[in-house]
Each structure stands twice: as structure tokens, then as C-alpha cells.
Image (cartoon, rainbow, N blue to C red):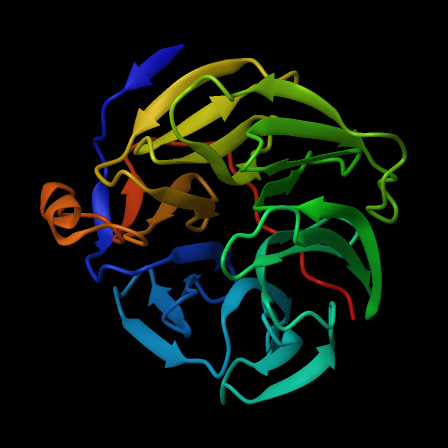
Amino acid sequence: MDIIPFSGKILCDEPLMLGEGATYDPATDIAWWFNIKGEALHELHLASGRKTVHPLPFLGSVLAVIDPDRQLIASDKGLFIRETASGKLSLLTTLEDIPANRSNDGRVHPSGSLWVSTMARDEAKGAGAIYHVARGTVTRLYAEVSIPNSICFSPDGSTGYFTDTAINHLMRVALDPATGLPAGEPTAISDETTTSGGIDGSVCDADGLIWNARYGSGAVDVYRPDGTKIARYTVPATQTTCPAFIGAKADRLLVTSSFQGMSDPQRAADPHAGKTFELGVTVKGRFEPAYLL
């Protein structure tokens, strides 16, 4: 495995307790991500550098574009439609009636359906789940998940990836490309239980490579579809959380991070913890599909 030192830049130097859920809208040239614990949605216009922070009335963790006027946000209170211009929120559907849980990782499948996950606020073992949402219909796919992460899909929609970070196996499952529903049983393609850090958020590029933020290791790891790890790009923040392809050609990579759980001495030793970065690498990315209502 090649290890590539960080040669990128800090895109946003505001440290977030739990930066997560990064995505990009090519129609507006805006990158979006969350500070989950800070109940805020962050907006960065790449060309101008204009930064806006939108307070939220919940713990948001996933954003998907619906159309130029609307977005879908997953939160601890359910799935909401957000009017992009005004920020007005309206409830689309709930995921589960478990007040102790919150939403976590998720991405839109090429079919326009959404995979979205939940976990306990206190990370209690087996309290979460992964769901499939299509036109407002919620289907539970996998139960008893502790820290669901790494949800992403192959370019043709025939394969899905995910993990339970508490177990640290990168999982692969065959999907129906037309619906995004599983067409088989998941199998582990990479056992990371003996390596440092945890498998966190992921995104799949145009060649089918999986780019994974490695929480606790200050890195983005790259896997082949068979689970072979081929590269590690270091990041100057230990708790890297979620990558996203950004830019007009989707050839840049944004990475969020977190200072959650760090003591004052640990933060002093990790001064960029919680900041948002761009890797200094050209990638063969692709834009996230829109969620179909």
C-alpha cells in the first residue's frame, strides 16, 4: 500500500466537534457538510470561498439534493425536506421511534433511493440500523448495528458498501440497480479489526474505487472493489470522518474531521482536529445522484 503525505489545504478552519455528511451540488458549486453535535449545516461556495453556517433544530447528518430548490436532510427527528433558499424545513417521514437514537451515515443510490442509518446517541452496542428510503417508503435493511458508516455504491448501482465501525469490517452486498435494494447477503471484503482506527465515511469513484475516511488514523484509505487497500492519503487531523467529491469535474476530494471526545491536551497536540480539508490529489470522482421524491 502506498502512503502519500498530505499536500492539500484547509478548506475551512472552523473546528467542528463532529464534522460529517459531506456532499457537493455541482449546479451551485456548493459543498455541504454538518456539525452533527453542533446542530448546524455548513455551506461553502467553492469559487468565491463564501462560507455560511445554517443553524438546525436537530442533529442533521446526511444531505441529498432533490432539485435546484429542495434538499433532503436526515436527522435524529426524521427525514426533512429543506427549501434551499429559505432554509424552511418540512417533515417527509420518520425513520424509527427511538428517542435515544440519531441518524448517522447515508448516501443516495444511483436509482434515486436513499440508504440512511441510525445509531444510539451514546453509541450503545447494536442500537442502530440501516434503512432504504424510496419515495418516502422506509424499509429496514440491517438491524443491530452499533456505528453504521461507509455507505456508498458502485457507479452502476449493482454493489453497495457499508460497515459497522464497532466491528470494523468493510462489507459488500449485491444490489438491484433499479431500486437499490439488496439482492444477496453481505460479505466482508476487508477485516480491519487488527489495524489502527475505524472505517468511517466512504465514497465510490467513477472507477469503482472506495475512498474511506479512517477515523483515528488521520487518513483517507483507497480500496479496490474486492477490498484490497491500495493507498493511504494522510490528513493533518487524527479523527477524519467523511469524504466527498467536489468541483466542476468532481476531481477534488473534501474531507471532514472531528474533535469529539478529545481532551484539552489531545486537542493541543492535534491542532487541526475538526477542520475541513481538501486532499492535494486529482481523483476520478462522480456527482451524487439526486433523491427522487
